[in-house]
Length: 308
Image (cartoon, rainbow, N blue to C red; front, side):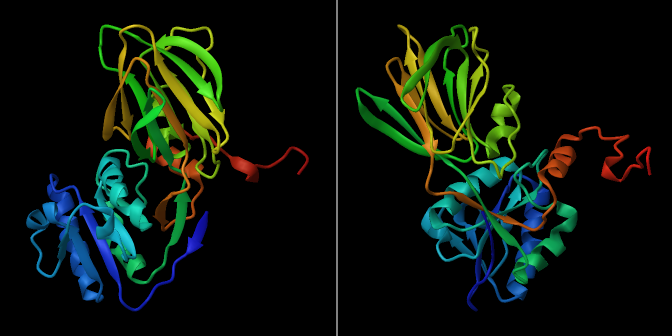
């Protein structure tokens, strides 16, 4: 879902930075100068304030309430930094704008060379907001929910012992689909189809297609293909066997144990993550640019036809 941006006269932005990178810190100071010069309050995480070291910022804790009332969360770093910022922004409903200072930076919207123009677009409110489906994730044991979390990209259920496989039964909408031994299972959104699910051999799903993916990791089974289901379906993975111990990871950041008898459920959440977008280029172009895909020789629809 896309929407235009409007706002009040009093403006505030939260800035999240990968302070372990000198280029990110330099970029943060540049962004601060632009924003404060435009009369916009800038909040920074209290754990990052000393590294950025600019006067006039408002240090805040890394909690969702710290993003309450901000117009945007600007992220300087890679996808890992953006996912860290998403923990804060999602609860407050604030859109996230990523400036890629990492490697692929698939979730980022801007590159460092465009930093000044990017901030000018923010100051001018010249951007769109896109909503991305997220996952609600639960671990159940003995019929009770023992852990709840969420994910933008994926929830992965993985074995904890390198020398053993885990035995699982996968389920879609309350019905068993298959049992197999594997290294794990990835439950992914369309956004996450270019992340862990992609590395595991899952399909690339365009982000405007609302869907959930179930992708087995190195499954020993006749039927071990990725599965794509509706966004309101419920995917479940039951850890079976005798001594298998698994782990559940949400976006590779937040985890919990999933011992034998555990049931991991994931479904589309009613609370999306909002992403700020500056460009309307097709997702195909983003794939080509981020993955360096070869397209030489393409002529497209403008090529001459034999009867022209």
